[in-house]
Length: 130
Image 1 (spheres, rainbow, N blue to C red):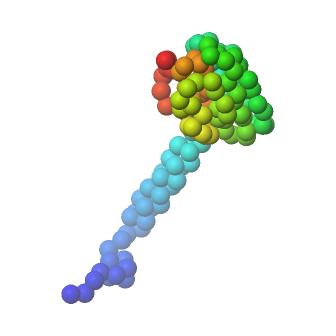
Image 2: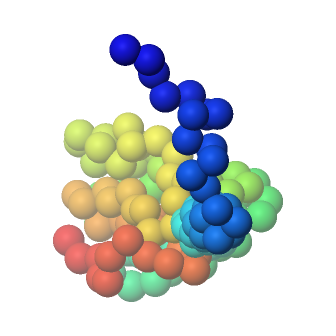
């Protein structure tokens, strides 16, 4: 049995087929570009007990210390990302989470009532509670 090759079915394509294919490829590229840019974070919002204590741009490195219910939480900000470096909570889940890099992602240090959320053009959820 002979396999179909490019030359075997190329004669079936008409100029309108090529146009539809070009429009489809352009739509996929535009959609992927828009989706990838939508997740780029611009700021880190730090909350203690649900109240915003600071909004920090993600354009230059800095270290932030906030006082929560159990003690001091240390947050590191680097261009385009943020993370919890140190927290007095017993399980260290927010520290183990590592760098946050997408808008809408959050590190929640529940025992200390501290949250770090990255914001941008879009969010992954509507609200943040603990």
